[in-house]
Amino acid sequence: RPLRPGTTERHTHTRASTMEGQGTQTERAFLKQPTVYVGKRRVLGKKSGKTTRFVRDVGLGFKTPSAAVQGKWIDKKCPFTGNVAIRGRILRGVVVSNKMTRTIIVRREYMHYLPKYNRYEKRHRNFPVHASPAFALVKPGDQVVFGQCRPLSKTVRFNLLKIETSKAAYAKAFNAF
Image (tube, rainbow, N blue to C red):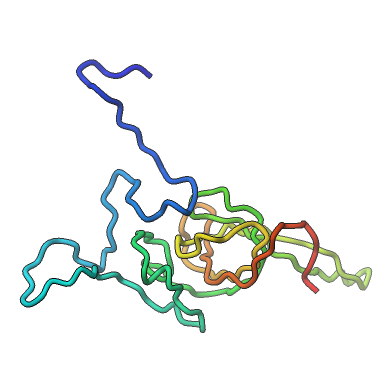
């Protein structure tokens, strides 16, 4: 598009497409944690270079990743640094895709019993799961644990809690049993 009259440069809105560049502010709005005061305040004593960061334990035996404690990124949908509670189901599956920004697709395979034939059939479900920047290294083929939370978007209702095992390449094989 041509520039408007009287302007010298075009302002473009860019988003980080991968999870590696989450340390800097890429959004138009200033991102901050709502529970941490970022303004200048007068402090008696020595100045400390360490900034405060809100981090919490989600419970259920899941440890807070060190990337969530030491990171500088802001994610309000992260269960460790944001305002999201894990409640409901805790599921396990294999990552199929990580092409979206902070969202992965996890395939969960299971067996369904058919009483008429007294046999089982293979079925699967794909779950869109929010992947916090604390899990920047998640890739297709990884075995992950994710938990249910409030709706984060139109389709996302789960949050990534732990990466269990890493696999080199993803094969669409049924590995439930």
